Structure formats: structure tokens, C-alpha cells
Image (cartoon, rainbow, N blue to C red):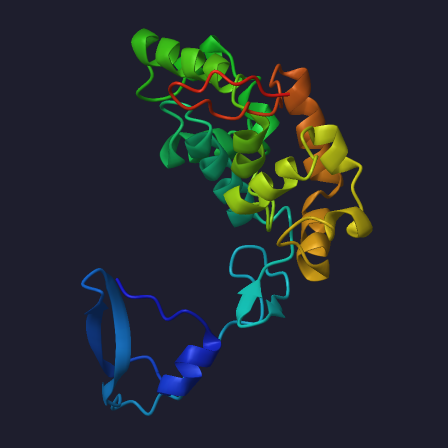
Length: 239
């Protein structure tokens, strides 16, 4: 499978459905469409990005070279956030198929809903026996001890990747409350965060995300900053 990156790249190749293309493996790893070898016989014109989200029909927004669905409640976004959160938090046996089953039953919609699942509910799911349920519940409890940095990354807030989170914690945003109380002026003082990035972070901390964070804390997630690693033989005390 080769990615076409964005509409600009497709336009540059003048790529249409039915065209025969040359595909190479750049760096011997990533398949890449290099150019069109033969145009299609049907007369199809250069493929254009849909103007509406295929999942929720919301008009897409273009930022830079990429298109985004701005609907936080888009079904595909809900599913994607839950799958991403479960994987990053190390929750066992809560993969895409199980998540889709729970969504179809209207049992989960946001990450906090995962922590309300019961043994009885999981037992009703196809493929879940006592051993599997116990492993799921154990990993669910263990996930509550994840440090602030890992929980923030798992929430999939736009622009809050590992590097940005590290820069924020080093700059004094060492609690979720400090992050929730931030504004553009304070965020742009952090290394690597400009006005656009800061605004995207604040937009990502929308009312539903704030509700999710509050509910996760109520469920027992600590949101505590991970202490700095101590190197072997380092006996120096750190403030």
C-alpha cells in the first residue's frame, strides 16, 4: 500500500483512477508512487479530494496541504480516538473489533467510558471468558498509574505529541490543571510552540476534552508528572 500524501501531490502527478503508476520503495521501506506510466482509457480526470467527510458529511477544512474533518463527534474520529487511547494506555484485549462492538452497543463513546465497563458487560461480548476479562480489568487498573505525559499523549490532542509534552513539562506545565489554565500568551513562551500550535492545543482542549479529563481523574487516573530518570551511579539529589 502506497500513500498519496495530499491533494497537491496528486495534482502534481495528474493522477486519475485507472492510471498505471510506477511504485518504488524509498529507503527500501516506504512504498511511494513516483509517476504515471500510462493514463487510464476511460478518460478519468485528476482525482479530487471529497469536500465532505465520508463518515459524517461535515465540510472538510484544509490547513496547509492537508484536509481535516472538524467534527469532534464524527463517528470515525470517535472510533479512532478510542482505539488510539486504548493502545497507548496499554489496555489489553480492547482492540479495534472490541471497541467497534462496544460503540455499536452505545456503551462507549469517549475514553472515560472505558473505565466504567464491568465484568458482566465484558462477559456478554463474543470471545471474552473469565481469563480474558481478568487480564482486561487488571490492565485497566494498571493504566490508571500512567504518568501525565503518557495520558496526555494517549488523548490524541492535536499538537500534543511527545516532544511538545516534554517541552511543556520542562517549562513548568507539570500538572493537568496548569495546562487547562493556559492561554496563548503562556503557551507561546514554551520552546517550540508558536501561535498556531498554541491555538491548536487550546482548540483541542475543547469542552468535551475537558469533560473527559475531569471524568478520567474521577475514575482514578493520577495525571502525575513522571519523575526524571536517575542514571546508574547518580546519587545527586534533585529538587
